[in-house]
Image (cartoon, rainbow, N blue to C red; front, side, top):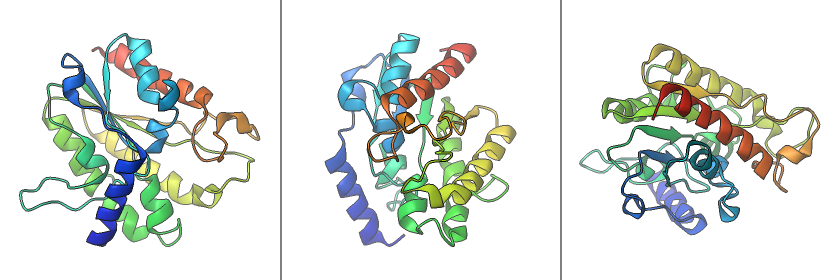
Length: 229
């Protein structure tokens, strides 16, 4: 991705959301990073991180921002400059809730001829690319990772319906990574929305309604409660 475009996306992300500073809740053990799937409904206190926080009874630092990309470039010291990876802040976290990649596919290659974009994010075997490197960096720092998958829209004509094949392949790669790596869990949400039911989506038929954010947040919370905080 061209450097100028990365900086433009980073600026847009800053305009579309506010990142919560870890210092706002110094005892928090969970951090959430990602794009609008996670950030949506935050103004009503109903986003996925909000739901997780309510369900586990423990603070979640929400660093998610709408329009964030997963791919990024790094500074001379190897630190990510923009996007989902730059949202993550080192800390004494027990869990990191992560998502991303949808904007890269929809905006980066128009969900067509996306092989190069997919491979940069994660290889077919799930072992290389920016996502495995990112998640391992988090995990190797002592933090367990939950990667949150995207909604599907069966029997609905939506602006992102043409992205289904690329989205399915992308998440299959994430699932392969999680199957092979300790400390990384993939939460699929392909079965959240019922066929032909628009109530699982926001007005734009892309982002989750509060109902979907609640269902997804409860799934993530269940993983945390099962494995322990």
